[in-house]
Length: 267
Image 1 (tube, one colour):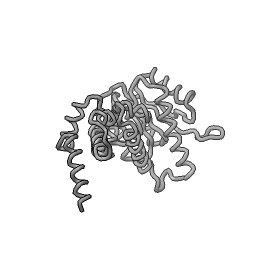
Image 2 (spheres, helix red, strand yellow):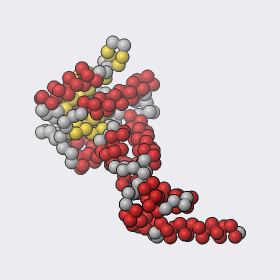
Image 3 (cartoon, one colour):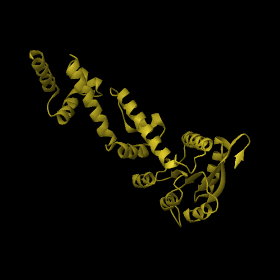
Image 4 (cartoon, one colour):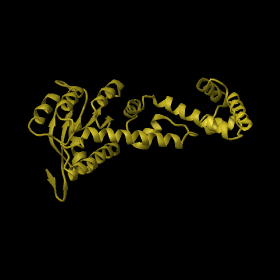
């Protein structure tokens, strides 16, 4: 389906509450642009019937619905149509739902009440990828949506790491990072673990401790100054974390480094 001078992408909207569905349709078509809601469904069963006859570009679905819930729908869609973009909208912040949704490679997970800006950002990113696929004519070629999605996830985590390393002396929370890159906090938490094999908090601690080691080796800064530059306002807490991580106190680590360099100079 084409709009005047630009692609118009087909959206299947699944939501069991009529008023919410109507509001989402108006937002998608009248405010965001580039998308047309070609079918609305109250549950997963009705949505699957439609997909068998007309494959949409994007599925926007609720999670908890009668008949067939969103998770089961996503599972079935992914089995048959791995290239369809899927955006989950739910009134439930239960992490288990987020985890299951991400396992089936949904493109994002938004919580109700829907933030208009967040939804716009999500659909804008999806539209950019759809535009690219259309130009390259690879909707069913080598550059599949799954591959593109994996590449996007790698880029997201690379960006997250850049933000962490640039803000080690600040209060780095998962919510802080999520706001920076416009992703749901729970989605980002699970995605980070999948891509790195580490929890977000553990990775931040590791980066801070490596920063502290570098400062202990290469500067004559006092311990409390190094603590602050590594993101710890409380020097005692910093020393406790450092000892757990490095197996010794910051002072002992610095002394060992000095002894090592003395041995090198003697040689």
